[in-house]
Image (tube, one colour):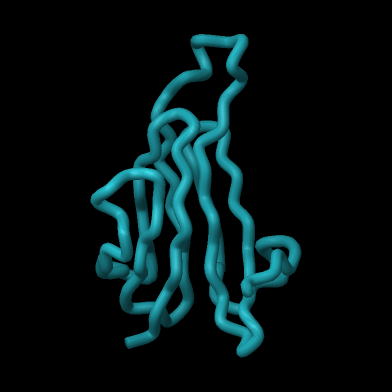
Length: 104
């Protein structure tokens, strides 16, 4: 079970987060202290101008890879490299995913 643990400033590995549109970032830890992040492109259903893709960049200290679990079939545990401590992904409106970073 992972529990929400607070703000980005309280993360041990998330150094910075940026987004091109409205974004939600939730930080969670499991019982062993391992962190994961839920990221989501959220928008106002009443405002069609807000329905834009959102590119989110997570700056992850000393992480080499991330496993992705999301709302699309291709993200069932897909592993991607973290380059120069940055993981970047573009989400469509309403799309979200769980990002699990790894040091290996």
